[in-house]
Length: 208
Picture 1 (cartoon, one colour):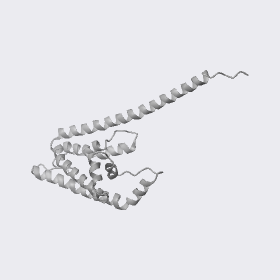
Picture 2 (cartoon, one colour):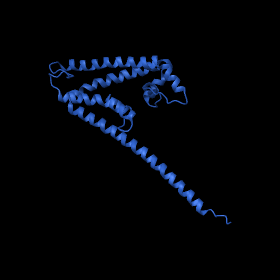
Picture 3 (cartoon, one colour):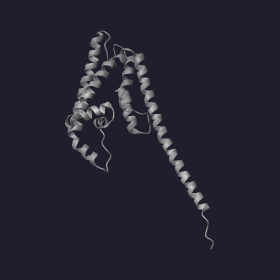
Picture 4 (cartoon, one colour):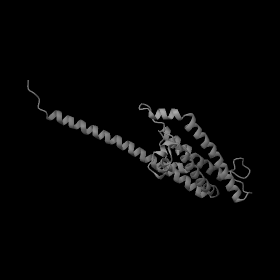
């Protein structure tokens, strides 16, 4: 989930519920596992690895347990988006008066990146399967690297620090773009008001 902060360009924008919720969902597991890895001992019921086991047993348990949870989530996502709410989403997205319902599948498919091109190359009915397969490969690769963060707390800390810095930078860029556009609009309004005032003063008054 940490990489999703980068992929989705999550931003630390406190007054935006949408942005702060997305950031929390993706960065909270990284923070929780870091705290557990440095504060819990072998006797804790919150332990996520067992010192008495071999490294490969620990890696297998961590990867395959997480992969099982991912498959359950992916099935629930497919059932919700592609079966239960499919007509609702399509009807809403065809409407000109309602906000578009953008799922992660729709968002990634419309991107100009290699991922978007890969999804669009598949037949229309197979595109959700292509998206799910791509996500599965992505999940396996990232889960394979995740145990390194557990066994090396310093690396885990640097990763967490990078994600916080990345989201803060994105948030600052968002604020800069918003406030600079508002400031530019105010300057345009002032310039227009000044031109109207000059026009009014330069226009000769008809004598009575």
